[in-house]
Length: 304
Image (cartoon, rainbow, N blue to C red; front, side):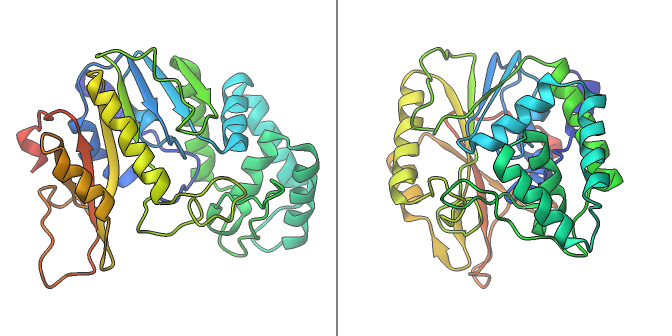
């Protein structure tokens, strides 16, 4: 990977302000990845913040939120101008703005009937905190983001850059639950990145209110078992998670690390002023964010 390409890649931002996205951590995460990757699997892709910035021969984005994957497939298959035309046309048609809640609800009702994937993006742009929420009937139900959310110039630019990356690279999308994903085609030159819902934190992705499977201790243990199996086949993986958050500890994760002492725990500092991050005893409510790998990353001296 050349310095120029790496710099360009780091500037690609997801068009979604996804909760738990890793945009701010990319300067720490990217140097910890293998230098050469054939297939890069983003198993819980969400906003695709990490995968879209990876220099790999092939990118595979997976997420069990099927409507999100449908939206990404539409971005990839449709002409960029057609996508922008549709988005801006819907904004004009429903008179969407920072204050027009009725127009937002009209479009939301239409989406829940027709399920046009590009309409989902428009809704996300104007919804509360740009969140993605579905009820048990798989109807989009996130409330209006009054005076907070809109399709602005920055979001438009991020969307355009994101779509260009999808079209210029070998990218495939998958909508499988992580337990159903087929890893059998992977080899030692491939990489599996996991950024699952964090067990000891809360968010719209694991609160059980989006109409899809939530995240419990069972899912946490199953994922760790899958990672052990990948390691047994010499397939490299990276796991983003937190060991502690607001006084809570992820005991399942800690026990797993104790049983696998050869896994490497890379501590991340969210404000990235110092990656070799150690939480002070007096700051018991601090969040300890880590990137766990089954290999020893070649960390550049400039990282610390």
